[in-house]
Length: 506
Image (tube, rainbow, N blue to C red):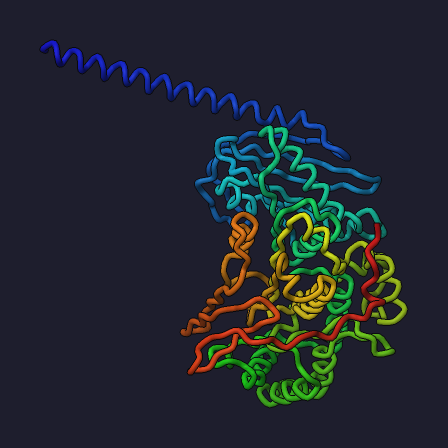
């Protein structure tokens, strides 16, 4: 070996040794950070509660409740908290914290569904992969939806308190872990999570910079009155799943005359109907399905009109035509909370019983305050969606809420400076077929790009519908000559009577 070769080999060896040492030092530093992260958050003093555990894991795989295995999960510290702001309140919270080098400087709070009562770890994974610190709560309703029977503290937790305390605790852990607060905080929720979202904007405007409220169950006590109304009617006049689907198809067929060509016969873009249109849908359903009886026709009339008291005051709107009736029955746990387990729910009436139920639960569960000025002043941004085929959380009360917000803000244009709303044709209970709402929110909060035209893309059999959507109060118009264009939407929905929307407590 010549001298030059020996020198080259020596340089290579030194370089290898340097790289090996650097790698070992990086691994050591990472291990120190990982081992120190749980200790730091474990010692964090959390108001109204305590840290139950803080565990660091680098397990890259997770098997969800449906036995699906998710891979590629980065290392994280998983913190579990118990918050007890009052006797009778037990709020579980879980927070996932990425390693400091992977954290993108942002925090996301997640909403729940139904009566909550548990925390789904699978819901954290997509966020932790993207570098977010993320938190969720069981809303204080564990172990099941009977937890609120006769317990007003659970009502408060489920209504608003658990989400706010989760947020406060998570931000405190983030500060403790990373030595600084998040640059941006976001909340994302659907259904019950949409209720949480609007409660945050209304009650705690400083908690989040941006909020997504999807199919929000914010008009909570009237919504469950609607469930009870439908349940009592279907209990007396049962529907089969096939009859339910036949009625849905008949509604879509009858309303096709009002649709742009791309949606005609596929979806109802605006299911607000006149009494004459209700009669037309019922007549067509009876024609299309001979198994439907005159008793069914009478039931459908009441279901499409929605619950009212004996004086005709509106408690909630009816099932949107073109959506499932059977999906809009049940969900009766709030009545057990108000009246106890011994109450026969089939005997509840829509006068005195509804007044008593509303008085107990409405002020803590409903998120109906249209004054979002504090949220707007601090620079908050809110994106909201409803689906026209959603019978679980129908759009009517949400559309009415948005219009009340516009009146409070001064005009729809003023409201849209910080709050936009999309009414999505044919969307059922969930967000599907439209532009990623979270990306819309982030671009608005961090880049100043207010959401405008987005796309709806959905498969109907062999045909794909791909059309633009515009923020309410505009809707999608179309002519062969002009193509797609925004046009004014119909305004207003029959509002819930004020007596069923009491002012918020506390």
